[in-house]
Amino acid sequence: MNQVNATKMEKRMNARIRKNNLLKGVFLLATLFGLAVLAILLVRVVTQGAAWLDWDFITGRLSTSADRAGIMGAILGTMWLMVVVIPVTLIIGVGSAIYLELYAKKGKLQSFIQTNISNLAGVPSIVYGLLGLTIFSRAMGLGNAALAGGLTLSLLVLPILIVSSQEAIRAVPKYLAEASFGMGATKWQTIKNVILPASIPSILTGAILSLSRAIGETAPLTVLGIPALLIPFPEGLFDTFTALPMQIYYWTLDSSLVKEYAYLAAATIIVLLVLLFLLNSVAIFIRNKFQQRY
Amino acid sequence: MPTNSGKPKQNAVNVREMIEEKRSSRNISNITEKLIPTILFIIASISVLTTIGIIYTLLSEAIEFFKIVPIWEFFTGTVLKPLSQNPEFGVLPLINGTIISSLIAMLVAGPIGIMSAVYLSEYASERVRRVLKPLLEVLAGIPTIVYGFFAFTFVTPVIRSIFPAVDATNILSPGIVMGVMIIPMIASLSEDAMTSVPNAMREGSLAMGATKLETTFKVVIPAAFSGIIASFVLGISRAVGETMIVTIASGSSKNFTFDITQSMQTMTAYIVEVSGGEAAAGTTIYYSLYAVALTLFVFTLIMNLLARYVSRKFREEY
Image (cartoon, chains in turn purple, yellow):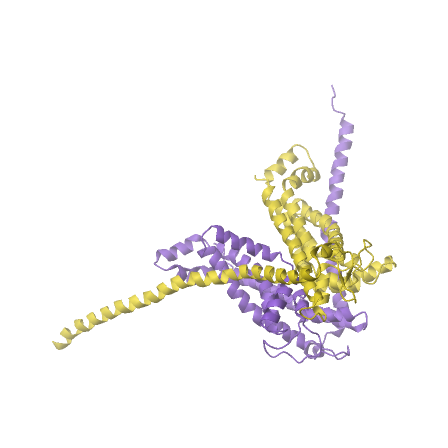
C-alpha cells in the first residue's frame, strides 16, 4: 500500500531545498550589499582625493583658492581636541566604572546611575552640542575654544568608555582580588595594584575606540559655531579652532559652488580615515598583545 | 661593654618609632581608603549631572520659547518660517522630515540588516563569519560626515541621472545612505539575538525534516523576535538623531510634503542651520532651537526606553 505519493513528495522536497538554496544566496547578497557600498565609498573618496593629497596640502594653511588650501589648522585643532578628550574621558570614565563595579552597593542608586548612563548613550550627538553651547560656550564663557569643543565631545563619548571599562573590570577574575585581600591589602591597594593593571589593556582599547568616535564627530561642533574661516593655527586650549570633520563639512557644502572643494573634502576624508584606521589598529594591537585570558 | 648596653636601648627607641610611623602611615592609608569612594562617587555622578544639565538647559530655554510661541501652535503648525518678517514656528515640517528620512533609512536597513543577520548566524561558516563581521563593523565606524559627503557627491547624482526630476537636495538620498549606516547596527544586534537561541531548538526542527530556511523563519526568528524588534527600535532612534547626512544632502527647505524627491529639513538639521547661523542669544529663533531639541530628545528617549522594555519584557528564556 503506497500511502505517500513518492514522486509528488520528492518534487515538493526538491522545491523546498531549492527555495532554501536560493534564499541563502539572497541573504549572502544582502550581507555583501553593505560591504559593496563601503567599497564604493572608499574607492570614490580615494579617486577623488588622492591627487590633491600631498605634503603641501597637509602642512598648508586654509585658503579660498583650492590649489593652495591646506589642512594643518584642522589637524592641529583635532589634536587639541584629543588633548582635552583623552585625560577627561579616561579619568571620569575609569573612575565611574571603578565606583559602579567595586564600590557602589547593589541597589537603587547604583541601578539609577547605570540606567542613566545607558540612556545618555542614546542621546543624539546634536543635543550634546546644545548642552556644550549653553554650558561651556556661553555660561563658562569659553566661546568656541578648543576646550569647549573637547569637553562637549568628552561628555558625548563618556557613556561608551564607562560601559567598556565596566566590562573590563568585571572580566578580572575574583580570585585575583581575593588573593590580594588575603595578603592584607586594603581595597584601594587591591584596585590600584591588582585590578587596574589586569584590566588596563581592555580599558585602553575602549578608550581608543571612544576617542576615534570623538574625533569623527561633527554635529556638536557645528552647534558650537566652530568656524572654517581663515583663522591662525590654534596654539592652546583657549584658541579658536577648527577640526578635520568641520573642514570636510564646509568644503562639501561649498562644493556646489566651487567644484574643486569636493576634491579637497575627499582628500581631508582620507586624512581623517587614515587617522581613525591608525587609532583602531593600535586598539586591536593592544587587545591582542596584552590581553590576558584567565 | 658599653656598646652592648647601648644597643638594645637604641633598638627599643627604634621599635617605638617604627610603631608610631606605622600608625601614622596607616592613618594616611585609612584616610585614602575613606576618601577614595567619595571621590569616585563624585566622578560617577558626573554622568547624572550631564543628564540633569541636558534636561535643565533644554527645558528652561524651551519654556522661554513657549512663552512667546504657544505650545499648541508649535506642535500643530505646518509652517516654519523662522527668518521671515512675521515668523511662524510650526514644528510639523521638521517632524515630518525626520519621520520620512527615518522611514527611508529603515526600509533599507531593516530588510538588509535582518537578512545579513540570518546569513551570519544561520548560514555562514565560522571562517566566513570571522571575515564578514569585522568588515561590516568598519561600516559602523565611518564618521557620519563621510556618509554625508558620499550622499551629496555620489548617491544624489546617481539618483538624478536615473530620475532627472529629483532635486539636487532631496530627502531620498540621505535616507538611503543613513540606512546603509544603520545596517551593521541592526545586523549585529539581531545576530546576537539569533545566536543566543539554543541549538537544541534548531536541531529539533531540522530533525523533523524542515529545511534551514524553514527552521530560520519558523523557529529561530520567532524565538529571537524581541531582540530583533529592539534592534529595529534602536535603529530608528539612531536615524532620528542622525545629523550630518541629512544636513548636507537634504538642504534646508522647510517643506511640509510627502514628496521624497524634494528637500526637507529634519529636526537635527534645523538645529545645525540655526545654531551655526546668526541666531543671537535671547531671540525667539534662538529659543526655538531648544524647543526643537527638546522634542528630539523626548523622541529618542522614548525609543530607547521602548527598545529596552521590548527586549526585557518579551524575551523568551530558555
